Length: 632
Image 1 (cartoon, one colour):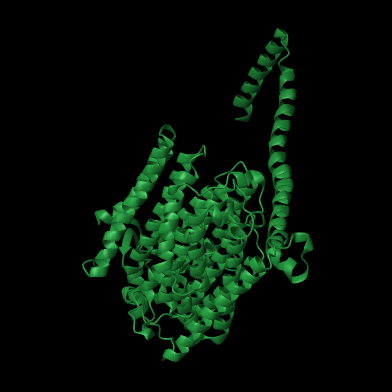
Image 2 (image 1 turned 45 degrees about the vertical axis):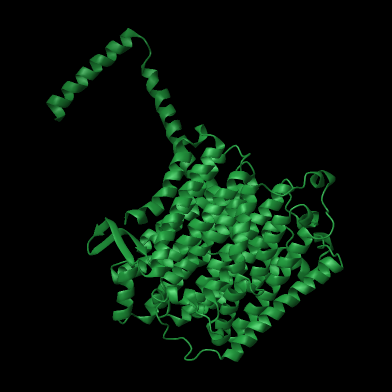
Protein backbone atom coordinates (compact mmCIF):
# COMPACT_ATOMS: atom_id res chain seq x y z
CA UNK A 1 0.00 0.00 0.00
CA UNK A 2 2.94 2.33 0.64
CA UNK A 3 3.97 2.31 -3.02
CA UNK A 4 0.38 2.97 -4.04
CA UNK A 5 0.24 6.01 -1.76
CA UNK A 6 3.60 7.20 -3.06
CA UNK A 7 2.23 7.29 -6.61
CA UNK A 8 -0.18 9.97 -5.39
CA UNK A 9 2.05 11.70 -2.87
CA UNK A 10 5.09 12.30 -5.08
CA UNK A 11 3.32 14.81 -7.38
CA UNK A 12 1.77 16.39 -4.27
CA UNK A 13 5.27 16.81 -2.82
CA UNK A 14 6.43 18.41 -6.07
CA UNK A 15 3.50 20.81 -5.91
CA UNK A 16 4.26 21.80 -2.31
CA UNK A 17 7.95 22.39 -2.97
CA UNK A 18 7.36 24.55 -6.04
CA UNK A 19 4.40 26.37 -4.53
CA UNK A 20 6.15 27.40 -1.32
CA UNK A 21 9.87 27.60 -2.10
CA UNK A 22 9.96 27.40 -5.90
CA UNK A 23 10.42 31.16 -6.25
CA UNK A 24 13.72 30.89 -4.42
CA UNK A 25 14.98 28.00 -6.55
CA UNK A 26 16.76 28.25 -9.90
CA UNK A 27 14.31 27.76 -12.77
CA UNK A 28 15.96 24.59 -13.98
CA UNK A 29 15.81 23.05 -10.50
CA UNK A 30 12.15 23.92 -10.13
CA UNK A 31 11.41 22.16 -13.41
CA UNK A 32 13.54 19.16 -12.49
CA UNK A 33 11.75 18.75 -9.14
CA UNK A 34 8.35 18.82 -10.82
CA UNK A 35 9.44 16.37 -13.53
CA UNK A 36 11.21 13.95 -11.18
CA UNK A 37 8.13 13.81 -8.94
CA UNK A 38 5.97 12.63 -11.85
CA UNK A 39 8.70 10.32 -13.14
CA UNK A 40 8.82 8.65 -9.72
CA UNK A 41 5.07 8.03 -9.94
CA UNK A 42 5.59 6.60 -13.43
CA UNK A 43 8.23 4.15 -12.20
CA UNK A 44 5.99 2.93 -9.38
CA UNK A 45 3.02 2.71 -11.75
CA UNK A 46 5.14 0.66 -14.14
CA UNK A 47 6.00 -1.81 -11.38
CA UNK A 48 2.33 -2.38 -10.63
CA UNK A 49 1.53 -2.61 -14.35
CA UNK A 50 4.24 -5.21 -14.93
CA UNK A 51 2.95 -7.09 -11.90
CA UNK A 52 -0.46 -7.39 -13.54
CA UNK A 53 1.21 -8.52 -16.77
CA UNK A 54 3.13 -11.38 -15.20
CA UNK A 55 0.38 -12.32 -12.77
CA UNK A 56 2.21 -11.40 -9.56
CA UNK A 57 0.04 -8.36 -8.80
CA UNK A 58 -3.45 -8.89 -7.41
CA UNK A 59 -6.30 -6.42 -7.36
CA UNK A 60 -5.93 -4.00 -4.43
CA UNK A 61 -8.90 -2.39 -2.71
CA UNK A 62 -7.52 -0.57 0.32
CA UNK A 63 -9.36 1.62 2.83
CA UNK A 64 -6.77 4.13 4.01
CA UNK A 65 -8.95 5.56 6.79
CA UNK A 66 -12.59 6.01 7.80
CA UNK A 67 -13.76 9.31 6.47
CA UNK A 68 -17.50 9.91 6.90
CA UNK A 69 -19.76 7.93 9.21
CA UNK A 70 -23.38 8.79 10.04
CA UNK A 71 -26.47 6.69 10.63
CA UNK A 72 -25.99 3.56 8.48
CA UNK A 73 -23.64 5.29 6.02
CA UNK A 74 -19.90 4.73 6.14
CA UNK A 75 -17.56 6.21 3.52
CA UNK A 76 -13.84 5.60 3.60
CA UNK A 77 -10.96 7.26 1.82
CA UNK A 78 -9.84 4.24 -0.15
CA UNK A 79 -7.74 3.30 -3.16
CA UNK A 80 -8.45 0.76 -5.87
CA UNK A 81 -5.77 -0.68 -8.14
CA UNK A 82 -6.82 -3.05 -10.89
CA UNK A 83 -6.10 -3.45 -14.60
CA UNK A 84 -8.21 -0.42 -15.57
CA UNK A 85 -6.66 1.98 -13.07
CA UNK A 86 -3.19 0.59 -13.85
CA UNK A 87 -3.74 1.39 -17.55
CA UNK A 88 -4.75 4.94 -16.73
CA UNK A 89 -1.82 5.32 -14.33
CA UNK A 90 0.60 4.53 -17.14
CA UNK A 91 -1.02 7.11 -19.42
CA UNK A 92 -1.29 9.86 -16.80
CA UNK A 93 2.19 9.51 -15.33
CA UNK A 94 4.04 8.49 -18.51
CA UNK A 95 2.69 11.18 -20.81
CA UNK A 96 2.49 13.59 -17.89
CA UNK A 97 6.24 13.17 -17.34
CA UNK A 98 7.01 13.85 -21.02
CA UNK A 99 4.89 17.01 -20.88
CA UNK A 100 6.73 18.14 -17.74
CA UNK A 101 10.05 17.53 -19.48
CA UNK A 102 8.88 19.48 -22.53
CA UNK A 103 7.71 22.35 -20.31
CA UNK A 104 11.17 22.89 -18.83
CA UNK A 105 12.28 24.29 -22.17
CA UNK A 106 8.97 25.64 -23.47
CA UNK A 107 8.17 27.72 -20.37
CA UNK A 108 11.74 28.60 -19.39
CA UNK A 109 11.38 32.33 -20.02
CA UNK A 110 8.11 32.68 -18.11
CA UNK A 111 8.35 34.69 -14.91
CA UNK A 112 5.91 32.33 -13.13
CA UNK A 113 7.86 29.21 -14.09
CA UNK A 114 7.70 27.66 -10.62
CA UNK A 115 3.96 28.33 -10.37
CA UNK A 116 3.44 26.57 -13.67
CA UNK A 117 5.18 23.42 -12.47
CA UNK A 118 3.36 23.50 -9.16
CA UNK A 119 0.03 23.60 -11.03
CA UNK A 120 1.13 20.78 -13.37
CA UNK A 121 2.08 18.61 -10.39
CA UNK A 122 -1.21 19.40 -8.67
CA UNK A 123 -3.06 18.47 -11.87
CA UNK A 124 -1.34 15.07 -11.95
CA UNK A 125 -2.02 14.57 -8.22
CA UNK A 126 -5.76 15.10 -8.59
CA UNK A 127 -5.95 12.95 -11.71
CA UNK A 128 -4.28 10.13 -9.81
CA UNK A 129 -6.82 10.55 -6.99
CA UNK A 130 -9.59 10.33 -9.58
CA UNK A 131 -8.15 7.17 -11.14
CA UNK A 132 -7.27 5.39 -7.92
CA UNK A 133 -10.34 6.18 -5.81
CA UNK A 134 -12.19 3.06 -4.70
CA UNK A 135 -15.49 4.88 -4.35
CA UNK A 136 -17.36 7.62 -6.16
CA UNK A 137 -16.71 10.27 -3.52
CA UNK A 138 -12.92 9.87 -3.67
CA UNK A 139 -13.18 9.88 -7.45
CA UNK A 140 -15.22 13.08 -7.17
CA UNK A 141 -12.41 14.74 -5.18
CA UNK A 142 -10.04 14.12 -8.08
CA UNK A 143 -12.82 15.11 -10.50
CA UNK A 144 -13.18 18.52 -8.86
CA UNK A 145 -9.44 18.87 -8.39
CA UNK A 146 -8.66 18.56 -12.09
CA UNK A 147 -11.41 21.12 -12.69
CA UNK A 148 -9.67 23.54 -10.35
CA UNK A 149 -6.28 22.92 -11.97
CA UNK A 150 -7.71 23.41 -15.45
CA UNK A 151 -8.95 26.83 -14.31
CA UNK A 152 -5.51 27.73 -12.94
CA UNK A 153 -3.65 26.54 -16.04
CA UNK A 154 -6.01 27.75 -18.77
CA UNK A 155 -5.91 31.20 -17.19
CA UNK A 156 -2.21 30.97 -16.37
CA UNK A 157 -1.45 34.08 -18.44
CA UNK A 158 -4.08 35.95 -16.48
CA UNK A 159 -3.09 39.43 -17.64
CA UNK A 160 -4.96 38.64 -20.86
CA UNK A 161 -8.68 39.00 -20.10
CA UNK A 162 -9.65 36.63 -22.91
CA UNK A 163 -7.62 33.89 -21.24
CA UNK A 164 -9.35 34.63 -17.93
CA UNK A 165 -12.71 34.34 -19.65
CA UNK A 166 -11.71 30.99 -21.16
CA UNK A 167 -10.67 29.71 -17.72
CA UNK A 168 -13.95 30.84 -16.16
CA UNK A 169 -15.90 29.26 -19.00
CA UNK A 170 -14.17 25.91 -18.47
CA UNK A 171 -14.79 26.09 -14.73
CA UNK A 172 -18.49 27.01 -14.99
CA UNK A 173 -19.37 24.52 -17.74
CA UNK A 174 -17.73 21.73 -15.79
CA UNK A 175 -19.75 22.66 -12.72
CA UNK A 176 -22.91 22.10 -14.76
CA UNK A 177 -21.79 18.56 -15.50
CA UNK A 178 -20.66 18.08 -11.91
CA UNK A 179 -24.20 18.75 -10.69
CA UNK A 180 -25.34 15.70 -12.64
CA UNK A 181 -22.50 13.65 -11.14
CA UNK A 182 -23.49 14.73 -7.62
CA UNK A 183 -27.17 13.95 -8.10
CA UNK A 184 -26.29 10.51 -9.49
CA UNK A 185 -24.00 9.92 -6.53
CA UNK A 186 -26.75 10.96 -4.07
CA UNK A 187 -29.19 8.54 -5.70
CA UNK A 188 -26.67 5.72 -5.38
CA UNK A 189 -25.89 6.52 -1.75
CA UNK A 190 -29.55 6.83 -0.79
CA UNK A 191 -30.56 3.55 -2.39
CA UNK A 192 -27.49 1.38 -1.81
CA UNK A 193 -25.94 2.92 1.34
CA UNK A 194 -22.48 2.77 -0.25
CA UNK A 195 -20.37 4.44 -2.90
CA UNK A 196 -17.67 1.76 -3.02
CA UNK A 197 -17.23 0.35 -6.52
CA UNK A 198 -16.74 -3.23 -5.34
CA UNK A 199 -19.79 -3.15 -3.07
CA UNK A 200 -21.90 -1.56 -5.81
CA UNK A 201 -20.87 -4.19 -8.35
CA UNK A 202 -21.90 -6.90 -5.91
CA UNK A 203 -25.22 -5.15 -5.24
CA UNK A 204 -26.05 -4.73 -8.93
CA UNK A 205 -25.15 -8.34 -9.58
CA UNK A 206 -27.14 -9.80 -6.68
CA UNK A 207 -30.17 -7.54 -6.21
CA UNK A 208 -33.01 -6.79 -8.60
CA UNK A 209 -32.74 -3.03 -9.01
CA UNK A 210 -35.52 -0.83 -10.34
CA UNK A 211 -34.92 -0.20 -14.03
CA UNK A 212 -36.05 3.41 -13.74
CA UNK A 213 -33.58 3.98 -10.92
CA UNK A 214 -30.70 2.54 -12.97
CA UNK A 215 -31.60 4.73 -15.95
CA UNK A 216 -31.78 7.83 -13.73
CA UNK A 217 -28.40 7.07 -12.11
CA UNK A 218 -26.64 6.36 -15.38
CA UNK A 219 -28.08 9.44 -17.10
CA UNK A 220 -27.00 11.71 -14.25
CA UNK A 221 -23.50 10.24 -14.19
CA UNK A 222 -23.34 10.70 -17.96
CA UNK A 223 -24.17 14.39 -17.56
CA UNK A 224 -21.03 14.64 -15.43
CA UNK A 225 -19.04 12.80 -18.10
CA UNK A 226 -20.43 15.12 -20.81
CA UNK A 227 -19.07 18.14 -18.97
CA UNK A 228 -15.65 16.73 -18.17
CA UNK A 229 -15.12 15.07 -21.55
CA UNK A 230 -16.61 17.89 -23.64
CA UNK A 231 -19.63 16.31 -25.30
CA UNK A 232 -22.61 18.11 -26.81
CA UNK A 233 -23.91 20.43 -25.40
CA UNK A 234 -21.13 20.97 -22.83
CA UNK A 235 -18.21 20.93 -25.27
CA UNK A 236 -17.50 24.62 -25.99
CA UNK A 237 -15.11 25.06 -23.06
CA UNK A 238 -12.54 22.67 -24.52
CA UNK A 239 -11.61 24.59 -27.71
CA UNK A 240 -11.44 27.80 -25.66
CA UNK A 241 -9.07 26.02 -23.25
CA UNK A 242 -6.40 26.56 -25.92
CA UNK A 243 -5.85 29.91 -24.20
CA UNK A 244 -3.46 28.18 -21.81
CA UNK A 245 0.18 27.39 -22.60
CA UNK A 246 0.56 24.56 -25.13
CA UNK A 247 1.83 21.97 -22.58
CA UNK A 248 -1.43 22.54 -20.71
CA UNK A 249 -3.39 21.79 -23.87
CA UNK A 250 -1.47 18.54 -24.28
CA UNK A 251 -2.02 17.57 -20.64
CA UNK A 252 -5.76 18.32 -20.68
CA UNK A 253 -6.45 16.76 -24.09
CA UNK A 254 -4.22 13.71 -23.94
CA UNK A 255 -3.45 12.51 -20.45
CA UNK A 256 -5.79 13.89 -17.84
CA UNK A 257 -8.99 15.84 -17.69
CA UNK A 258 -10.93 14.97 -20.82
CA UNK A 259 -10.42 11.23 -20.34
CA UNK A 260 -12.04 11.40 -16.89
CA UNK A 261 -15.56 10.98 -18.27
CA UNK A 262 -14.49 7.93 -20.27
CA UNK A 263 -12.85 6.48 -17.18
CA UNK A 264 -15.90 7.04 -14.99
CA UNK A 265 -18.27 5.25 -17.37
CA UNK A 266 -15.76 2.44 -17.93
CA UNK A 267 -15.34 2.09 -14.16
CA UNK A 268 -19.11 1.90 -13.61
CA UNK A 269 -19.71 -0.40 -16.60
CA UNK A 270 -21.48 -2.84 -14.28
CA UNK A 271 -24.22 -0.22 -13.81
CA UNK A 272 -24.46 0.93 -17.43
CA UNK A 273 -25.01 -2.56 -18.86
CA UNK A 274 -28.32 -2.63 -16.97
CA UNK A 275 -29.51 0.55 -18.73
CA UNK A 276 -29.50 -0.08 -22.51
CA UNK A 277 -31.52 3.09 -23.05
CA UNK A 278 -28.80 5.18 -21.43
CA UNK A 279 -26.12 3.39 -23.39
CA UNK A 280 -27.95 4.23 -26.61
CA UNK A 281 -28.04 7.88 -25.51
CA UNK A 282 -24.32 7.73 -24.73
CA UNK A 283 -23.62 6.33 -28.18
CA UNK A 284 -25.91 8.86 -29.86
CA UNK A 285 -24.41 11.85 -28.09
CA UNK A 286 -20.93 10.51 -28.80
CA UNK A 287 -21.42 10.05 -32.53
CA UNK A 288 -23.24 13.40 -32.83
CA UNK A 289 -20.32 15.10 -31.11
CA UNK A 290 -17.85 13.26 -33.35
CA UNK A 291 -19.41 14.44 -36.61
CA UNK A 292 -20.29 17.91 -35.33
CA UNK A 293 -16.76 18.69 -34.11
CA UNK A 294 -15.22 17.13 -37.23
CA UNK A 295 -17.13 19.51 -39.50
CA UNK A 296 -15.92 22.48 -37.47
CA UNK A 297 -12.34 21.24 -37.74
CA UNK A 298 -12.55 21.40 -41.54
CA UNK A 299 -12.33 25.21 -41.63
CA UNK A 300 -10.36 26.21 -38.53
CA UNK A 301 -7.11 28.10 -39.12
CA UNK A 302 -5.66 28.23 -35.61
CA UNK A 303 -3.30 25.25 -35.32
CA UNK A 304 -4.36 24.53 -31.75
CA UNK A 305 -8.09 24.98 -32.47
CA UNK A 306 -7.91 22.34 -35.23
CA UNK A 307 -6.40 19.91 -32.72
CA UNK A 308 -8.93 20.92 -30.06
CA UNK A 309 -11.91 20.12 -32.26
CA UNK A 310 -10.25 16.87 -33.30
CA UNK A 311 -10.07 15.97 -29.59
CA UNK A 312 -13.78 16.68 -29.14
CA UNK A 313 -14.48 14.50 -32.17
CA UNK A 314 -12.26 11.63 -31.00
CA UNK A 315 -13.84 11.74 -27.55
CA UNK A 316 -17.18 11.36 -29.28
CA UNK A 317 -15.95 8.14 -30.90
CA UNK A 318 -14.82 6.86 -27.51
CA UNK A 319 -18.25 7.55 -26.00
CA UNK A 320 -19.88 5.83 -28.96
CA UNK A 321 -17.74 2.77 -28.21
CA UNK A 322 -18.85 2.80 -24.58
CA UNK A 323 -22.46 3.25 -25.65
CA UNK A 324 -22.42 0.13 -27.84
CA UNK A 325 -20.81 -1.88 -25.05
CA UNK A 326 -17.33 -1.96 -26.58
CA UNK A 327 -15.64 -0.84 -23.35
CA UNK A 328 -12.24 -2.27 -24.25
CA UNK A 329 -12.33 -0.54 -27.64
CA UNK A 330 -13.09 2.79 -25.96
CA UNK A 331 -10.19 2.39 -23.55
CA UNK A 332 -7.92 1.24 -26.39
CA UNK A 333 -8.65 4.45 -28.28
CA UNK A 334 -8.09 6.50 -25.11
CA UNK A 335 -4.56 5.09 -24.90
CA UNK A 336 -3.63 5.46 -28.57
CA UNK A 337 -5.24 8.90 -28.70
CA UNK A 338 -3.11 9.93 -25.71
CA UNK A 339 0.01 9.02 -27.70
CA UNK A 340 -0.73 10.83 -30.94
CA UNK A 341 -2.70 13.76 -29.51
CA UNK A 342 0.02 14.61 -26.98
CA UNK A 343 2.55 14.48 -29.82
CA UNK A 344 0.37 16.70 -32.03
CA UNK A 345 -0.17 19.33 -29.36
CA UNK A 346 3.47 19.38 -28.33
CA UNK A 347 4.39 19.52 -32.04
CA UNK A 348 2.11 22.52 -32.48
CA UNK A 349 3.85 24.08 -29.51
CA UNK A 350 7.20 23.50 -31.20
CA UNK A 351 5.89 25.33 -34.27
CA UNK A 352 4.47 28.18 -32.20
CA UNK A 353 7.74 28.39 -30.29
CA UNK A 354 9.72 28.69 -33.55
CA UNK A 355 7.34 31.34 -34.93
CA UNK A 356 7.31 33.40 -31.71
CA UNK A 357 3.64 32.91 -30.94
CA UNK A 358 2.12 32.63 -34.42
CA UNK A 359 -0.78 30.13 -34.48
CA UNK A 360 -2.52 30.86 -37.81
CA UNK A 361 -1.64 28.13 -40.33
CA UNK A 362 -2.24 30.62 -43.15
CA UNK A 363 0.95 32.35 -42.01
CA UNK A 364 3.06 29.20 -41.95
CA UNK A 365 4.22 26.83 -44.71
CA UNK A 366 7.43 25.03 -45.65
CA UNK A 367 8.47 24.42 -42.05
CA UNK A 368 9.69 20.87 -42.67
CA UNK A 369 12.87 22.39 -44.12
CA UNK A 370 13.79 24.08 -40.85
CA UNK A 371 12.02 21.74 -38.39
CA UNK A 372 12.52 18.16 -39.63
CA UNK A 373 12.02 16.43 -36.25
CA UNK A 374 8.84 18.37 -35.53
CA UNK A 375 7.60 17.61 -39.05
CA UNK A 376 8.22 13.87 -39.00
CA UNK A 377 6.78 13.36 -35.53
CA UNK A 378 3.76 15.50 -36.45
CA UNK A 379 3.31 13.50 -39.66
CA UNK A 380 3.45 10.14 -37.87
CA UNK A 381 0.87 11.27 -35.34
CA UNK A 382 -1.35 12.67 -38.10
CA UNK A 383 -1.21 9.32 -39.88
CA UNK A 384 -2.15 7.64 -36.61
CA UNK A 385 -5.18 9.84 -35.91
CA UNK A 386 -6.27 9.47 -39.54
CA UNK A 387 -6.39 5.69 -39.20
CA UNK A 388 -3.61 4.78 -41.61
CA UNK A 389 -2.13 1.28 -41.38
CA UNK A 390 0.00 0.28 -39.48
CA UNK A 391 -0.14 3.21 -37.06
CA UNK A 392 -1.92 2.91 -33.72
CA UNK A 393 -5.07 4.83 -34.60
CA UNK A 394 -5.80 2.42 -37.44
CA UNK A 395 -6.36 -0.43 -35.00
CA UNK A 396 -8.19 1.42 -32.23
CA UNK A 397 -10.47 3.47 -34.49
CA UNK A 398 -11.34 0.55 -36.78
CA UNK A 399 -12.19 -1.53 -33.74
CA UNK A 400 -14.69 1.13 -32.67
CA UNK A 401 -16.15 1.36 -36.16
CA UNK A 402 -16.55 -2.42 -36.32
CA UNK A 403 -18.38 -2.42 -32.97
CA UNK A 404 -20.66 0.35 -34.23
CA UNK A 405 -21.35 -1.55 -37.46
CA UNK A 406 -22.36 -4.63 -35.50
CA UNK A 407 -24.61 -2.60 -33.20
CA UNK A 408 -26.20 0.02 -35.46
CA UNK A 409 -25.54 0.85 -39.11
CA UNK A 410 -26.44 4.53 -38.69
CA UNK A 411 -23.87 4.95 -35.94
CA UNK A 412 -21.26 3.29 -38.12
CA UNK A 413 -22.03 5.47 -41.15
CA UNK A 414 -21.89 8.74 -39.21
CA UNK A 415 -18.74 7.72 -37.32
CA UNK A 416 -17.08 6.67 -40.58
CA UNK A 417 -17.87 10.04 -42.13
CA UNK A 418 -16.37 11.79 -39.09
CA UNK A 419 -13.23 9.67 -39.50
CA UNK A 420 -12.90 10.64 -43.16
CA UNK A 421 -13.21 14.31 -42.19
CA UNK A 422 -10.53 13.81 -39.55
CA UNK A 423 -8.07 12.52 -42.13
CA UNK A 424 -8.83 15.49 -44.40
CA UNK A 425 -8.51 18.32 -41.86
CA UNK A 426 -5.46 16.80 -40.20
CA UNK A 427 -3.57 16.68 -43.49
CA UNK A 428 -4.91 20.10 -44.41
CA UNK A 429 -3.09 21.14 -41.24
CA UNK A 430 0.06 19.18 -42.13
CA UNK A 431 0.30 20.46 -45.70
CA UNK A 432 -0.44 24.10 -44.86
CA UNK A 433 2.04 24.10 -41.98
CA UNK A 434 4.97 22.08 -43.28
CA UNK A 435 4.90 22.11 -47.10
CA UNK A 436 5.04 24.77 -49.80
CA UNK A 437 6.59 28.20 -49.32
CA UNK A 438 6.86 29.99 -46.04
CA UNK A 439 4.08 32.59 -45.77
CA UNK A 440 5.13 34.35 -42.59
CA UNK A 441 7.19 37.51 -42.14
CA UNK A 442 10.84 37.84 -43.08
CA UNK A 443 11.73 38.32 -39.44
CA UNK A 444 10.02 35.02 -38.55
CA UNK A 445 11.77 33.29 -41.45
CA UNK A 446 15.14 34.61 -40.31
CA UNK A 447 14.69 33.06 -36.86
CA UNK A 448 13.25 29.69 -37.95
CA UNK A 449 14.99 26.75 -36.29
CA UNK A 450 14.32 23.32 -34.85
CA UNK A 451 13.26 23.33 -31.22
CA UNK A 452 15.68 22.40 -28.38
CA UNK A 453 16.26 18.79 -27.37
CA UNK A 454 13.94 18.97 -24.33
CA UNK A 455 11.12 19.75 -26.76
CA UNK A 456 12.01 17.32 -29.54
CA UNK A 457 12.83 14.33 -27.29
CA UNK A 458 9.25 13.99 -25.96
CA UNK A 459 8.02 14.39 -29.54
CA UNK A 460 10.17 11.47 -30.69
CA UNK A 461 9.06 9.20 -27.84
CA UNK A 462 5.39 10.01 -28.41
CA UNK A 463 5.71 9.54 -32.18
CA UNK A 464 7.20 6.08 -31.65
CA UNK A 465 4.32 5.19 -29.33
CA UNK A 466 1.81 6.57 -31.84
CA UNK A 467 3.40 4.39 -34.52
CA UNK A 468 3.60 1.08 -32.64
CA UNK A 469 0.91 1.46 -29.96
CA UNK A 470 -1.57 -0.54 -32.01
CA UNK A 471 0.20 -3.79 -31.12
CA UNK A 472 -1.71 -3.89 -27.84
CA UNK A 473 -4.91 -4.49 -29.80
CA UNK A 474 -4.11 -6.45 -32.96
CA UNK A 475 -7.26 -7.93 -34.55
CA UNK A 476 -8.18 -11.40 -33.34
CA UNK A 477 -9.77 -12.36 -36.67
CA UNK A 478 -6.32 -12.17 -38.30
CA UNK A 479 -4.99 -14.69 -35.80
CA UNK A 480 -3.47 -12.18 -33.36
CA UNK A 481 -3.98 -12.01 -29.62
CA UNK A 482 -5.85 -8.85 -28.59
CA UNK A 483 -3.67 -8.21 -25.58
CA UNK A 484 -5.63 -5.28 -24.13
CA UNK A 485 -8.92 -7.18 -24.29
CA UNK A 486 -7.45 -10.01 -22.26
CA UNK A 487 -5.76 -7.60 -19.87
CA UNK A 488 -8.98 -5.67 -19.10
CA UNK A 489 -11.26 -8.73 -19.08
CA UNK A 490 -11.42 -8.92 -15.24
CA UNK A 491 -12.72 -5.33 -15.07
CA UNK A 492 -15.55 -5.37 -17.61
CA UNK A 493 -18.59 -7.50 -16.92
CA UNK A 494 -20.40 -9.25 -19.76
CA UNK A 495 -23.11 -7.20 -21.42
CA UNK A 496 -26.46 -9.06 -21.47
CA UNK A 497 -27.66 -6.79 -24.28
CA UNK A 498 -24.66 -7.38 -26.56
CA UNK A 499 -25.12 -8.92 -29.97
CA UNK A 500 -25.35 -12.69 -29.87
CA UNK A 501 -22.80 -13.18 -32.63
CA UNK A 502 -19.84 -11.22 -33.90
CA UNK A 503 -18.97 -10.05 -37.37
CA UNK A 504 -17.64 -12.50 -39.91
CA UNK A 505 -13.97 -12.30 -40.84
CA UNK A 506 -14.79 -11.17 -44.35
CA UNK A 507 -16.99 -8.36 -43.01
CA UNK A 508 -14.28 -7.16 -40.64
CA UNK A 509 -11.68 -7.23 -43.40
CA UNK A 510 -14.06 -5.31 -45.66
CA UNK A 511 -14.73 -2.66 -43.00
CA UNK A 512 -11.04 -2.28 -42.23
CA UNK A 513 -10.10 -2.03 -45.90
CA UNK A 514 -12.88 0.45 -46.60
CA UNK A 515 -11.86 2.70 -43.71
CA UNK A 516 -8.21 2.56 -44.80
CA UNK A 517 -9.01 3.41 -48.44
CA UNK A 518 -11.36 6.17 -47.36
CA UNK A 519 -8.67 7.74 -45.14
CA UNK A 520 -6.16 7.56 -47.99
CA UNK A 521 -8.68 9.21 -50.33
CA UNK A 522 -9.25 12.03 -47.81
CA UNK A 523 -5.50 12.61 -47.51
CA UNK A 524 -5.14 12.52 -51.30
CA UNK A 525 -7.87 15.14 -51.64
CA UNK A 526 -6.14 17.34 -49.07
CA UNK A 527 -2.88 16.92 -51.00
CA UNK A 528 -4.55 17.85 -54.29
CA UNK A 529 -6.19 20.93 -52.80
CA UNK A 530 -3.41 22.34 -50.65
CA UNK A 531 -0.23 21.06 -52.32
CA UNK A 532 -1.01 20.56 -56.00
CA UNK A 533 -3.40 23.49 -56.31
CA UNK A 534 -1.67 25.48 -53.55
CA UNK A 535 -5.03 26.65 -52.21
CA UNK A 536 -5.15 28.71 -49.04
CA UNK A 537 -8.03 28.78 -46.57
CA UNK A 538 -10.60 31.42 -47.42
CA UNK A 539 -10.80 34.50 -45.27
CA UNK A 540 -13.84 35.17 -43.17
CA UNK A 541 -15.17 37.83 -45.53
CA UNK A 542 -15.11 35.55 -48.56
CA UNK A 543 -17.13 32.78 -46.91
CA UNK A 544 -20.88 32.46 -47.22
CA UNK A 545 -23.65 30.00 -46.55
CA UNK A 546 -22.66 26.70 -44.97
CA UNK A 547 -18.95 27.54 -45.11
CA UNK A 548 -19.46 30.67 -43.04
CA UNK A 549 -21.69 28.78 -40.62
CA UNK A 550 -19.03 26.11 -40.07
CA UNK A 551 -16.20 28.65 -39.87
CA UNK A 552 -18.06 30.39 -37.05
CA UNK A 553 -18.59 27.03 -35.32
CA UNK A 554 -22.33 27.11 -35.99
CA UNK A 555 -22.53 30.23 -33.79
CA UNK A 556 -23.03 27.97 -30.77
CA UNK A 557 -21.05 30.31 -28.51
CA UNK A 558 -23.17 33.21 -29.69
CA UNK A 559 -26.35 31.23 -29.04
CA UNK A 560 -25.17 30.34 -25.55
CA UNK A 561 -24.28 33.97 -24.98
CA UNK A 562 -27.75 35.09 -26.03
CA UNK A 563 -29.77 32.38 -24.27
CA UNK A 564 -27.70 31.88 -21.13
CA UNK A 565 -25.06 34.54 -20.49
CA UNK A 566 -27.10 37.65 -21.26
CA UNK A 567 -30.18 36.55 -19.28
CA UNK A 568 -27.98 35.64 -16.31
CA UNK A 569 -26.19 38.97 -16.56
CA UNK A 570 -29.55 40.75 -16.78
CA UNK A 571 -30.84 38.94 -13.70
CA UNK A 572 -27.62 39.68 -11.82
CA UNK A 573 -27.83 43.37 -12.71
CA UNK A 574 -31.49 43.44 -11.71
CA UNK A 575 -30.61 41.68 -8.47
CA UNK A 576 -27.91 44.27 -7.91
CA UNK A 577 -30.23 47.17 -8.66
CA UNK A 578 -33.19 45.93 -6.63
CA UNK A 579 -31.81 43.83 -3.79
CA UNK A 580 -28.40 45.42 -3.33
CA UNK A 581 -29.10 49.06 -4.14
CA UNK A 582 -32.62 49.29 -2.70
CA UNK A 583 -32.81 46.78 0.13
CA UNK A 584 -29.22 46.30 1.29
CA UNK A 585 -27.94 49.81 0.64
CA UNK A 586 -31.34 51.23 1.65
CA UNK A 587 -31.23 49.46 5.02
CA UNK A 588 -27.68 50.70 5.66
CA UNK A 589 -28.52 54.26 4.65
CA UNK A 590 -31.78 54.22 6.67
CA UNK A 591 -29.91 53.11 9.76
CA UNK A 592 -27.46 55.94 9.28
CA UNK A 593 -30.20 58.54 8.73
CA UNK A 594 -32.19 57.39 11.79
CA UNK A 595 -29.05 57.54 13.90
CA UNK A 596 -28.26 61.04 12.66
CA UNK A 597 -31.84 62.18 13.26
CA UNK A 598 -31.89 60.83 16.81
CA UNK A 599 -28.46 62.27 17.43
CA UNK A 600 -29.55 65.69 16.24
CA UNK A 601 -32.53 65.65 18.62
CA UNK A 602 -30.74 64.21 21.63
CA UNK A 603 -27.80 66.55 21.40
CA UNK A 604 -30.15 69.50 21.98
CA UNK A 605 -30.38 68.57 25.64
CA UNK A 606 -26.61 68.88 25.88
CA UNK A 607 -26.82 72.69 26.04
CA UNK A 608 -23.89 73.33 28.40
CA UNK A 609 -26.05 75.44 30.84
CA UNK A 610 -25.66 74.30 34.48
CA UNK A 611 -29.07 75.62 35.44
CA UNK A 612 -30.73 73.46 32.80
CA UNK A 613 -28.85 70.40 34.03
CA UNK A 614 -29.93 71.11 37.68
CA UNK A 615 -33.56 71.52 36.56
CA UNK A 616 -33.44 68.20 34.71
CA UNK A 617 -31.87 66.51 37.74
CA UNK A 618 -34.63 67.79 40.05
CA UNK A 619 -37.37 66.76 37.60
CA UNK A 620 -35.81 63.32 37.31
CA UNK A 621 -35.75 62.88 41.11
CA UNK A 622 -39.38 63.95 41.36
CA UNK A 623 -40.34 61.58 38.54
CA UNK A 624 -38.51 58.75 40.30
CA UNK A 625 -40.34 59.28 43.59
CA UNK A 626 -43.71 59.61 41.88
CA UNK A 627 -43.08 56.31 40.11
CA UNK A 628 -41.95 54.52 43.28
CA UNK A 629 -44.66 55.74 45.67
CA UNK A 630 -47.71 56.27 43.49
CA UNK A 631 -47.37 54.12 40.35
CA UNK A 632 -45.25 51.11 41.36
